[in-house]
Amino acid sequence: MLQDQHGRGVTDLRISLTDRCNLRCTYCMPKEVFGPDYVFLRKDQWLHFHELDRVVEAFVELGVRKIRLTGGEPLLRPGLVKYIEGMRRFRQIEDIALTTNGLRLAEKVGDLRDAGLKRVTVSLDALDADLCGRMNGRGIGPNVVLAGIEAARAAGFGVKVNMVVERGANDSQILPMARYFKERGVTLRFIEFMDAGNYNHWSLERVVSGREILDRLAEELEFEPVDVSSAREVAKRYAYKDGSAEFGLITSVTQPFCGGCTRARISADGRLFTCLFASEGVDLKPWLRGDALPQDELLGRLAAIWRGRSDRYSEVRSAATPRLGKVEMSYIGG
Ligand code: SAM
Ligand code: SF4
Ligand code: SF4
Image (cartoon, rainbow, N blue to C red; front, side):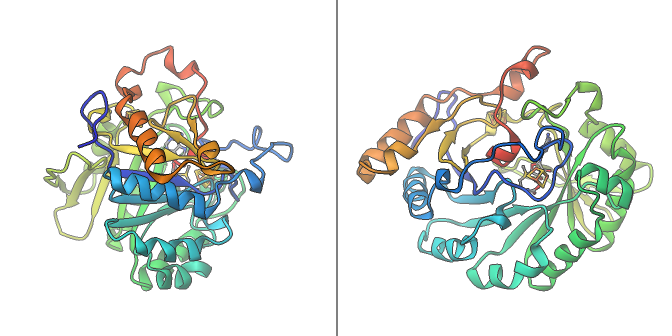
């Protein structure tokens, strides 16, 4: 079985379909940096879907069983629905999910379902309209996203909600968000604010630890941990004692999980990253475009990259690491 330097296989592939987005979340694409002059990838720099198919095919052969489509905002990528439909031919893939900011979810949900998508993760950081608008940098309140979530549930999707928690920004929303999604039986996942990218003014003081989130929830709600044996599980799961819903914690800062990290990531322009915090990826485009490599050679090169992988950024994070040049979240997709 294919293993990296720390004995980790490759089971998950995250594909960023565009680096563009219709929001400017403060922790991801702060509008001061990602303003009108910011130069995004040109569309001809995007990996074409048929090129992506070759990469997916190779990774499936190497062990990938789970695909997550992300961005930027993946619903902005033209041709997305057809692409998802085409993925059905990879029989070994057990799970395809999409992470979205939900702005255009309600209008796309029918097509996405017909294409065979079954799961979506929707990002929402506050129910309070002002706070929500501030966090997303565009002054957009939560209602459009909540409507997207409802539309997805009504269409039969498995829906999870991601909330990035940042001290002094939206930590007052931990309980209101928990109550709201508990009532509706939707899994809410609290994500520790990460030092991703280079522009989000991250500091450890602004991280609300998973431990603290649990303490705040325990002031009002009763819950217990859910036993999970899978090392692939990134979120720590909890269930409310009344059986109404689950919630999760993604503690990549305070309790890293590099030891079980079996994820590969592809940026919209076809770079392969073996860690979310890497500064450089391997450009796959020359292997896929023009004088393209035969499939077996492509597979061999991807396997060699994985075998050489030794990343464990979150475990070695230190005061100095946040200053290293890192890839942007909007580019690689979280
Ligand atoms: N635009 C889509 C969305 O927002 O869901 C998909 C891409 S977004 C980069 C993927 C996930 O990364 C989102 O759930 C977002 O909240 C999360 N994210 C972005 N920046 C982050 C940061 N600095 N710390 C923690 N999570 C972050
Ligand atoms: Fe866009 Fe998602 Fe980043 Fe927010 S988190 S700016 S919605 S890519
Ligand atoms: Fe995986 Fe890198 Fe995150 Fe560690 S820091 S869990 S290696 S992506």
